[in-house]
Length: 154
Image 1 (cartoon, one colour):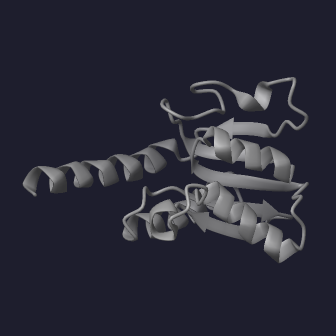
Image 2 (image 1 turned 45 degrees about the vertical axis):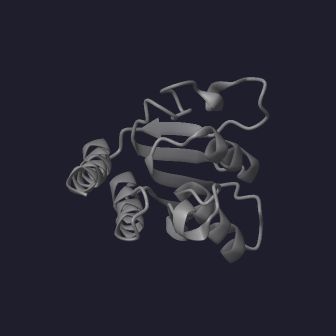
Image 3 (image 1 turned 90 degrees about the vertical axis):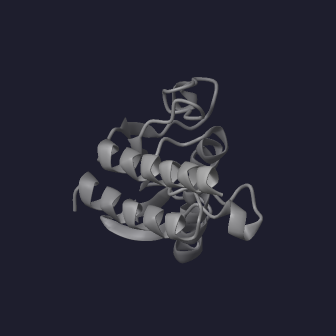
């Protein structure tokens, strides 16, 4: 499978988040060309500020693989990771992060800062951004436009 195929799987997860009223961000963890973890944003419904898509996918993969370390695994996420998720990614020893849309407000894989390039940190995942960026960004834009429209009519 290709990066685009795995990002489409992450987009499916993002759509699940949106259908639950959560910000539509989705993620999958891939090991040996197989999806071993899935997750979507759910901090509101779980009452858990750490329930971002990346963290949920890492938790799922860790459980399935029986290890909190995920060396050799790649993470595909529809939105550039935030600082919290990047820390979890580093602690999990993810090999490569592939993301869709950039996040100019909280993204730390190059937009606001680049935590993955910080030499003082002990793990550095390879970063590849912009995969299906337009589709990932449009999903987010549509979600927020619909939310604003509901607010204006309420």
